[in-house]
Length: 383
Ligand SMILES: Cc1ncc(COP(=O)(O)O)c(C=O)c1O
Image (cartoon, rainbow, N blue to C red; front, side, top):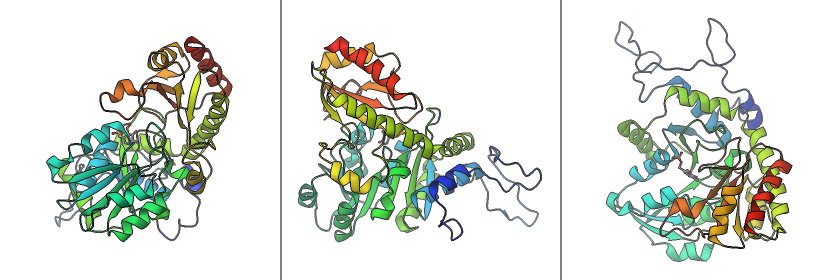
C-alpha cells in the first residue's frame, strides 16, 4: 500500500476501484485489457515494462493492487484458481520442508497435500485450533510452513492466527492463511502476523459465481515471494484479463455484500439452533461454538456467511433436506449472491472428516425470512 492510500478505509478503496488512468476519453471504468503482446520501442525497450500477456496484464495488475490494499499487503498476485494459488506456495518451497496443516480444510486442497511427498515435502495434519497439538507436531529444524484455514471448511473451525504466528516465528517458519471464508472485510491475517494470505477469489471476492480465480497477498516481497511469482510465470497459471476485470467489478461491492450475507447467516443460525430437526449448528458466531471466543477477537464486524447444520435424523435425511429445498440451490462452491446447500460428505468422499449428516449452507443475498422458510419446509421432510 502506498502512503496516499494507507489512511483510506478498505470500503472506500473497493468502491472506487477500477478507476483507470486512461487519458484520451477519461472513462471512469477501466477497460478490459486483452492484449497478449506489446510493441517494443525502436530502441528495443519496453517502456511500460509490459512484454507478454502470461506475466503482464494491466487488468490483472489493477485487480492485484486492490487485493493488496484490502489485505494491507506489500503485494498480491492473481492465479487462474484458488488451487493454483495455494499449490504455487508449496512448489516454491525449499525441499524438503515439513508442513503443519489444518486437519479440517477445503477438501480438494487437503487431497493434494496428502500427495505432497511426490514434491519432496512432508505434511502433518493437526487440529490447529489446539495450540498444544500444534506445538507437539513441530519438528525443530524441519518445520518450515504452517498452513491454516480459518474458518475452515465445512465445520467452520476457528484457528487463532496470532497464536499460530507466534509459533511459526519461534520455528522460523512461514505462516499462510486460507482466508477465503473470512474475507478481508472480517479478518486481515497479515495484521495478525501471517506472512501470506490466500483466497479462492472464486468465492466472496468475486461474489457472482462467474469467475474461477485465486489470490495470494504477502506481508513482504522476499525470496519465497519472488519464487512464487516465478512459479506462476513458469507454470502459466496466471489469470486472464477478462476474469480479472470481472473480479475487480465484484470486489467493488465486497463490503456491502459480505456484511449483509453475514447478518443473514447470523439470523439463520439463531433460528436453526432451536429447530427440532437440527442436531447442531456450526457457525463461529454462535456462543457455544468452540472457536467463538477467538472468532470474537480476530473476526471484526461479522462471523462470515458460511454455516453448517447437522440433521438429527442422519445421513439420508440430510440428503432429503437438500433435495426438498427450492430457494437454496443444490450446488458446490460458495460466496455468491445466491444461497447454496450442499451435502458435503457426498462430494468429499472416502476418508473425509465431514459427518454424513452435515449440510453446508452458503448464505447469499436473499431475504432472511425467505431463506428460513424454505429451509424450514425442507427440514419438515426429515422430521
Ligand atoms: C477454502 C477454499 N480454499 C481454496 C479453494 C480452491 O479454490 P478454487 O476452487 O478457486 O480453485 C476452495 C474451493 O472451494 C475453498 O473452498
